[in-house]
Image (cartoon, rainbow, N blue to C red; front, side, top):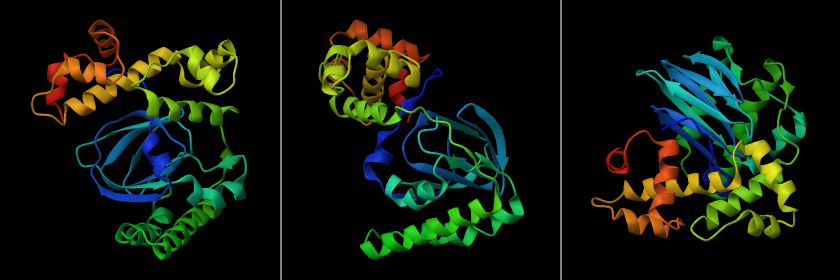
Length: 266
């Protein structure tokens, strides 16, 4: 896939704590409103968080503040804890630091290793009961509290209108299969279309129409990869494209291979 980035809405809609342990493949540039931590257990990976590039290895942590664009390219031996902290579980952290956050590369290996028991406890806690959620929030606060006490904080770098953009992206994620235009979506949120267009372009880095079609392409690919013999034209029109020509033109922006080959890749 060619260079681009996208809004990963699933984490924000769930607004929970998730921790998974295992290997991770290449992660395309994306962002969400949840906080994210990747604790490297084995191997190493190249990270880029909000334009800052670094390599993190065993017992180092990559910290991603909400709404920061991030990606990673791990080596063959990479194993990590991936911790996703939904907005409501990070309230104490956000309220405490206000306009500051942790650095994206937390590299004190000896100190970080002292936090492994808390990550392991979260990993073992699979319940979703109210009591389990309370325990999860307590463990999150212990991890973040220790990190804040040990590492210097840095200013948060986000755009002041991120809330508007996230609302718009959530709207697109829910209505991508319908006709959406600059006129309709700016009217939906009560903004002048020229102002909304400039705002969207400033944060997302591409036009509204291009982003909508990127979402549609990803949905077509995702659905096609779940079927043994996908009917391309049916998927294309069901996911909001008005013609095969428009689909192929937008597909070529993000993939270097034909659709049939991409559909076979899992």
